[in-house]
Image 1: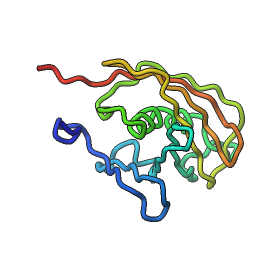
Image 2: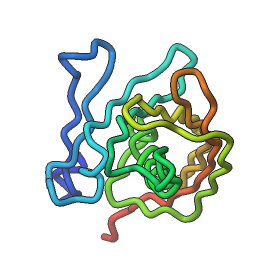
Image 3: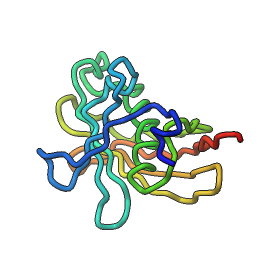
Image 4: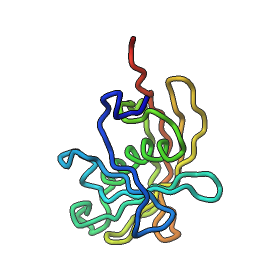
Length: 155
């Protein structure tokens, strides 16, 4: 049964006509928090890891003119789910973040794409354990890890 058939919030997930090899990932509810980070794009790298991308704008800026750490943390949370979806984990739409940790290494600049490179460590019937890196133009911005609990409908 599809996520939509289960009544989950829906996202547009389709090949991106402007970026060959990438997919569009957008919330269909424009008031959703995720919409502040759209357009989000996804692809699977040659090494089997998922790559999740967003373009930081002025609304993601801190007082120093760089990308706010809170924006990076919010993007990490979205990348856990979008990356898991790209890696074939279903369903993720009503999953819940159990924990997430971010280690900041460098600052990200406004206007250049920021990527989360996502790797699945382990998946069980109800949990997914993920780690990754935040990169911008070849620079390491942060490392992260997270666990989410998949939603399993009760009969």
